[in-house]
Structure formats: structure tokens, C-alpha cells
Length: 340
Image (cartoon, rainbow, N blue to C red; front, side, top):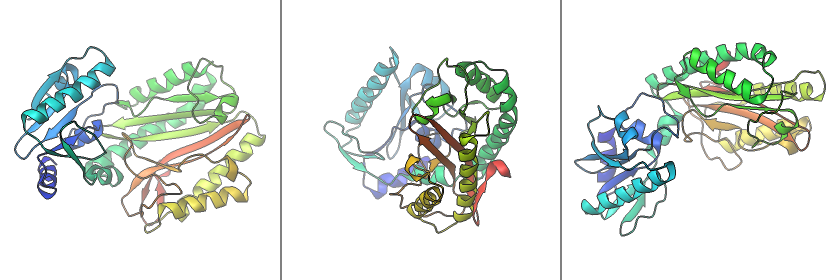
């Protein structure tokens, strides 16, 4: 991957390429290990003949066996560590007499011209290679085992925090190495707010459980809604399951993301739920934030081999929310990996 990135330097006539996203750094160095955002804070600088890694002592320890020039920064506290990394990068670029630096996201660096180049990592996360897909499918198998255990776990839990901790324990016990993102458990009326966070509230109906499993450098996320009655919430849940399944039949190679989203909203409107939709109906595969987002503005054309999460949900203000999420892979149509 480093050799490929050096070709970008040549193509854009750059003095250096800056990689600041944690997961891009892992991908660039072919690191097949899982981390979450709070564990390491690497920053990679690539020139025509050298590779530099800037980070705190804990980050650099994780990369001790990699052939890069390591530059440590003080780790006084989390926020200061991030600022110190940037300051060290600026000093390094000046020492190397860098005038033009390539970046994947807009970035201002005093005294240096930054050129936004095509994000080559996005495709790597959208269309995983054989090893990454193997990790994703292993994460799915672990997730499926956890999903089977959730009904019993709910029965033995008194509050959201207790259930969240139990789900985290299951992730580790069943083979997940790290959390793809923090597990969320939300219950009762609080489910109508998509931004609610887990608290010490007692378990009530409905109950949304959202968790992720990482294996190696890839993973999968899962979301389920549980209800303890057969009323309106159950009816809405069943409607969403049917809409999700009809969407999987509609999604196929050649479809444009915006057209897929439009179809989703049409199906919601047929059952009177359209006005309660929120956000994109797809999310990138774990970890990170790069990949396919199916939204009204999406211009992505779906192709075979793409992997992402299909994420459907509605949120009725002051009443309740219902959400379902699973990883899918594009073949002749979208295949729900949990159902394989």
C-alpha cells in the first residue's frame, strides 16, 4: 500500500502525503489489528523515500515492529496529545522543506500548500479484499451468536447500563477483539430520539440494542428493537422488517444511491411512516466512517462486492423509535449477511 501511495505523490507532484485518519493509517501500513478511536492517535507522513509515524508513546509502542521512522509526542492528556501531534507534523514538514502536501480531507497548514487528492481508502472500505471480507464474515458469525442470546440477556437485566455491560461481555467472550463502537442500549420513550445515550434507566418497551463486533481490521454492526407487547410498536416493527426485505430485493448492481433512498421513502409512505424517517439508510462497514451512505444526495453507483450496513428506522416524536441494522453484501442483489 505504501508503494501505491507514493505513486500518488508522483501523480500530483507532491512533496509529501499526509494521512491523518486513524483507520487510513492502519490500512496504509497493512495492520490487521482492531483499535477504537480512543486507543491510538497516529499520523502518517509519506515522502518519496521515507515514511514517518507521529504519535504518543502508547501509539508508537503498537507500531514498534513496523519499518517507519517514529516521532514521539508528549501525552499529557487526550486533547493536548492531538494538538502536539499536529505541531510535531508542522515541524517535520518544515524540516523536510515540504511546500506541497497531499491530503484526503481539506486541511490548512501554515506556510504549506495543501492539495486535496482522491481518497483511495474509501474504495478499500466499500469493497473489501479477501482477507477483510473474511474478517467481516467472522464478525457477523459472532454477532449472530450474540443476537441469539439477547432475549435471555434482556430478561436478566434491570437497567440500560447493566444490559450494555452484559452485551459488551458477550462480544469479548464470543471472540470479538474490540468494540467497533460503543454499545448502546436505549429503552422506553427515549427511543424516539436517535441521539439518546445509555443511562441507568430501567428496561422498558420498546428496547433498542445497537452493538458492533471487530475481527482484525474489519467488523460489522447490528441493531435490533425489542417490544414486550403486541400493540402499535410491534406493528411498526413488522412493517419495517417487510420494508427492509423489499429494499434488499430492490438493491442491486447499477442502482444509484439516491434512487435506492427514494424507493425506501416510497415504501415508508405506503404505510404512513414516511415523515418519521431519519438519516441515511446505509452506513459504512466497521470500523471508521468511510464507505457507502445511501441518502437523497448519494451519487454512489452500487457494484458487486460492496459491503455496507442497511439501516432502517423511524422515530415518532414523544412516543417511540424502531430501528433495524444488518451488514449486507452486493451480489446480484443485496444479501443480508446475518441471514446467510
